[in-house]
Image (cartoon, rainbow, N blue to C red; front, side, top):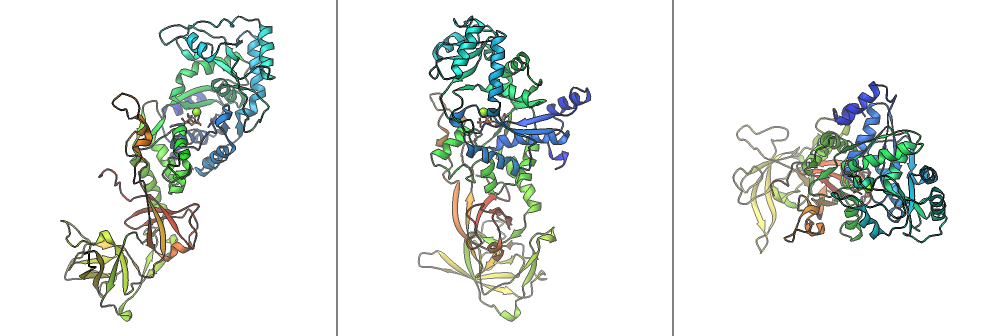
Length: 557
Ligand code: ATP
Ligand code: MG
């Protein structure tokens, strides 16, 4: 990877460059800190490219850290998928950590805070705590348990740990400021009692640390220099700073925020994506219509294409809402250079060549990629019966139609010019086949007496069949999770599913399809980019997924 592959000149780079120049750090350490409660999505791809990209550009390090402090929703399956996705995107983490590996240390820091008189065991119920918290305009009230002695706090906290108290009956809170203008600073809870099995620590703990506390200290333990997160954590930064400044933390990390990526016609929330999976609306987290990294991979998106997209969306604090077209454009750009081409006929129309003479017909050797000879070549030979695309023939052609019409001519890609002389229909008037003649003098050259403008793709009758899945956007609304009804309430995003987001057809393809491994990227000439399915494709029964059409077809609809 080259430095130019990553977003340039953004404010975080400026900060890092200053920090390195001023000698604040000799080298930087970043981290990507997912919670293993779902599969990664396109928003995470941006964060991965940013964090790993910065480490790459400045010769630093980047850790992968699982922020696993919510045992109910976390699992090893998610951990595995996250590792696979980060690696697939092209990044190798320096160290792999789990916040749960720090539970003992975090517990020690909490005792340290109690001993310093900076934390207390509270017994307010969740409802009472909400009441005491105050509002944005009104200061909160101090808990009646706030002024217990250090000894009592330490004793109660130890007994919380050893399982003496029921779930939810006590919490450990920081003693900061109930009148703070920042609600996060009003004596935030840092431990809660919860008897749930953790995917790594099992039943060892019945108290779990809260996210803000855990996150800041995990950064400090790993000597993270620049802790980069999304803007919704801006108001948590004072708490982050408070935590790392009030314990004997191994280092002093700093948090910087950038704006979250939002992709139109899509959803970037693990919780909502999870809903699509559990309600069987999609076939799984890796359904090719999902904006998850594993879904996009199965759809045929490429790591280089996603990295190009991440570079183009940039890094800033202003709104980062982008159209699907920006993503699709980056994918096309990568595939244009890297995917060889074949002909496929998705909706076949039979064409019989009435003047076919075997001795006259020559096959043409055509390369699989027009600019890159390394992809090789194959011979394309006309046969007495061929198939063309139904859309490439019109009995009553609209103005400007350059493809085949009755009495008209068209060139077959990499082959001869044919002329349609007759349309054959069944009793219901449906076209069943065309009768055409071939001009034997047109292989590799144009006729001198007339111009034939159109070129269409085709395949001989012997072409093998493949299952082809045509995917479209999953949602019809730009922001499916931000539509309000007449009552002003948000409507359920499930209402805005695109009913035509998948169509499966049987198509004709070139014989090379029967030799391809899964995840082979090809352009079907004139139709789009396709990939052999990662799981369902076999050499006997090829299955292709449409990655993206050649042009943006959505805008026209
Ligand atoms: P979700 O709301 O989908 O669960 P999250 O922010 O809770 O997302 P985490 O697993 O906590 O998911 O995120 C890991 C990292 O990825 C965090 O640093 C987070 O800021 C970043 N991230 C998550 N979503 C986006 C996004 N849409 N754009 C950019 N970065 C994101
Ligand atoms: Mg989260």
